[in-house]
Length: 231
View 1 (tube, rainbow, N blue to C red):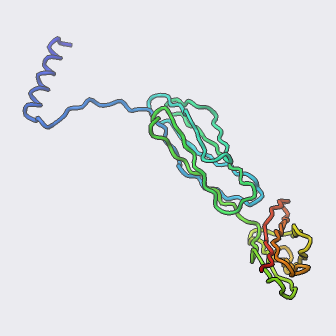
View 2 (view 1 turned 90 degrees about the horizontal axis):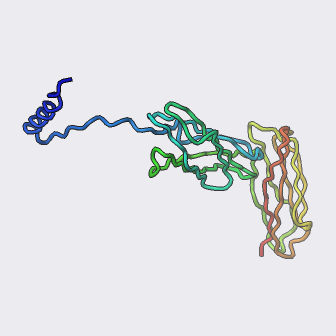
View 3 (view 1 turned 90 degrees about the vertical axis):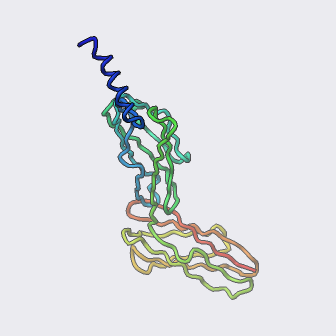
């Protein structure tokens, strides 16, 4: 290469900027390392009684250098995180697994997972895990009541299986022996009636009635019914 090459380049650049003073010439920047996530949100569905649900967040290092995951923080202690490793080479793929302990809750559960990586430590990635915990059966109504001094009578609570489930039985034992309960099967595997009646309505009381719904899957989730005698 000629020893005049560099001086000539500098001279050409100077002349170019004289004629185009507002134009800034930039050297191409190297492509930085970075994790690219396949999905920032994963939605799952489970039946109540399954206790837990696993979700997988997949990613790949699309940059030119290694990237390390330095911190993973779920929004609650009911979510457990596992990573096969913490550092990923350029082009390498990985998975973050999140296991949500659903317990006996019913309905939509949404948990946030904050991930910090070495490529962008000031810009954490927010992952969202959504789990819909589906009830095996619905209870209607969820509470019944009598007035103090009201004539003793049975109140009706209907327990209906989810359209995708079959009920093999329902057990109901009031937490107070002053309340009586009996189960009537209306449609085998689908509909049951819980009949409740107080032994006396002379005084106010509030009684929780746990109802254990049994299915062929051997899950035994408990739904709650409240019986009240009101002043």
